[in-house]
Amino acid sequence: MRADLHIHTTASDGSWTPGALVDELKKKGISMFAVTDHDSVSNLKKTQELARKEGLYFIPAVEISATFQGQLFHILGYGIDPADPGLTELLRHNTELMNKKDDDSIRTLIAQGYQIDFEKYKNYKDDGSRGGWKALNFLIDEGFCKDPKDFFKNLFNDKYNLGFPVFPSPQEVIKTVAGAGGVAFLAHPAGGLQRKLDLSEVLESFTQMGIAGIECWHPEHDREETDYCLDWCMNNRLDISGGSDSHGVFIKTRQLGVPQIFLEQLRLDSLKAYLAG
Image 1 (cartoon, rainbow, N blue to C red):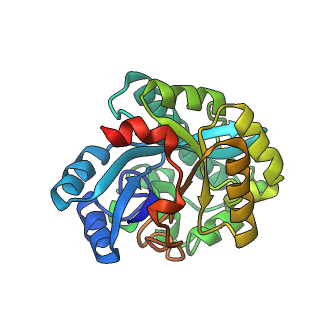
Image 2 (cartoon, rainbow, N blue to C red):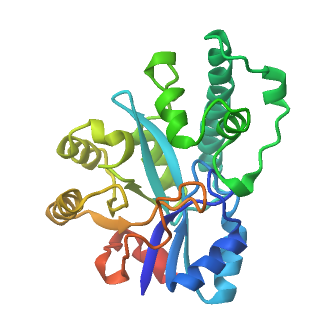
């Protein structure tokens, strides 16, 4: 059984609707999957309905933003109850922080001399089918950046002091996921912004904080990093997950089902009760 336990949809910054995603999964021969939108669970119910209809094994999940040592980390919550009040409040809080950061970022760019019409930005209607988010797509459409890579290199950087908000701590996120009936995995510990940090220190810190598992397979992990994460999980009795982190057409370098993962390569002991149900 092929598996992909890290996928984004139009509920956050992916380009697939639940229906389009399920169609793609069938084409790829992926039988087990998880939708892990950033701080959002709004597409889980529809996706679950479609997965059940098509005979696919679906795990409801979410990717939650957390701040640790001044850095942004993502924590995957698998097997969660999307309607849990504590989880709902945490996701609302994080979404509010990001929306405010987007607005503040536009204001900062204006203060730096960019000829941006803030009212035009506020009234801008984002097209979810293209992926991404409102501020990014507005700036692309207005010609201030070409794509996400250009955005992060030339606009969302230290020069303009456009950092991420301070999100809740990993401990709070892990506790909230558990309260929602789920289990918490650390997403891509060697990918993205985490590449600035020592991998062993990251894994040690999150292990001490009570993380249940590690996303060992990820398109931004090289072979050495993947093996290091796998060894860490084996030596510390942590679960093993993996996924493509695909966003549909939004991030073209991340393809659904890549890296190729089979169920027997994963260890999901902490999800046994959920999987059995």
